[in-house]
Length: 191
Image (cartoon, rainbow, N blue to C red; front, side, top):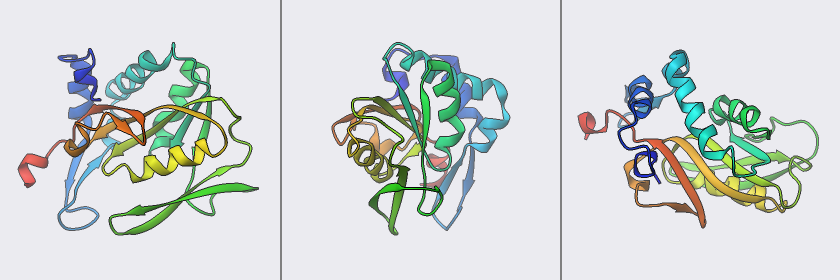
């Protein structure tokens, strides 16, 4: 669900977050309207609003793990984890983690990829939220859910800063709730 549909309609923090995200046309290839969150990170107030909204949502849900999807989930996940008293678990691309890992493959529009996690990163029954910057098709988040659940963790929700309009009616992902702060900017100019 989008934050504006869940008690935050008209919240000026959402407008500040949306305004802080730069849109880069035709990157990384023709036809893509890239949602660049690096400008959000440069705006300390908008970045704080982002973290605060997620913390307000999750602080009383007994979350023990915040799992961040490489790489942009790493920019939001640790701050949220610290604020709610949870550990942070990085979900990485292949070959980036030392030691024993487990992995989950997934399909992309242009091929396939894989996420990896240390085998001892989560314990059975730990309550997890998964954080990423953007949800488009849900393939990466679905792989993250499978990876964490394969170790017995309970995925409570997936959370993203940006959600494409196609996911607006999709309040669940593999049966898990999906929480999104803002819709992408610049799509009307391009379509």
